[in-house]
Amino acid sequence: MRNPFAGLRRGVTLFAGLIALWWLATLTAIPAFLLPSPAAVAAALWQNADYLSHHTLITLTEILSGMAIGVLLGGALALGMTFSPGLQRWMMPLVITSQAIPVFALAPLLVLWFGFGMSAKVAMAVLVIFFPVTSSFFDGLRGVTPGYLDLARTMGASRPSQLRHVRLPAALPALGSGLRMAAAVAPIGAIIGEWVGSAEGLGFVMLNANARMQSDLCFAALFILVLLTLALWLTIDLLLRRLITWAPETI
Image 1: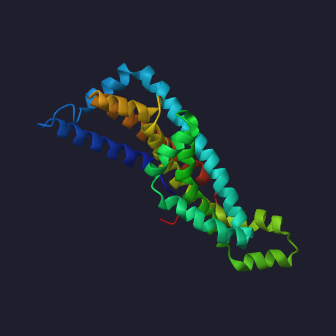
Image 2: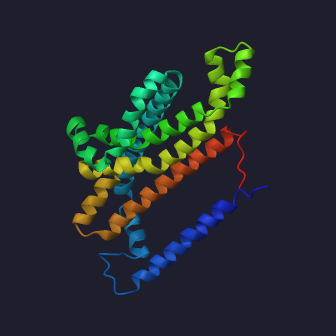
Image 3: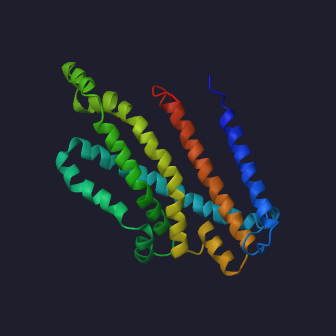
């Protein structure tokens, strides 16, 4: 049986090692405005707790909204392409093209179209996670063992029944991989949107702190963003482990 605390212990050990290396680096001749010490970043976190909490909530809302919308749109498109070869031929090139365009190039346009509010940041997050969700779910849906589908048809299962009892269970592991990837990259979209144009969020905090040479505050915002990403990934991973019990890990 796998020790459920083994992964946590390794993570804590790795994190402590990185902090130690960071602290040792600050003992060199590197100026504090280039690389603040862990103690200075911890002090910035404590002294600006209310300020950072407000902006963290904004960024978290953008990330979760983008995740929800992106998963719904990506899942719906994957289902549509599975049952409609014509839709697949028309939409798959568009899905691939959406990833060929750098997100930094789209961010100014989205801010221009949607304004400086939360909508542009949510749209950025949706664009970033749309492809991994659509691609992974579509591959899972079309990768079902043909014999299972033949057996379902022989037993008189309708197409909705085949989807519910055969295709979806078989595609969930692939969708899980897409969701884990989406959880890791969704914050990137939100932060890029905040960098391009925003008056709130952790991206705004980092830009503002960097302009004022407040490296400790910039690192504090970055540290919170890392924790948010890890928490989101671990939450989705835990839910998927509980949901997809028929696909055990082999390593």
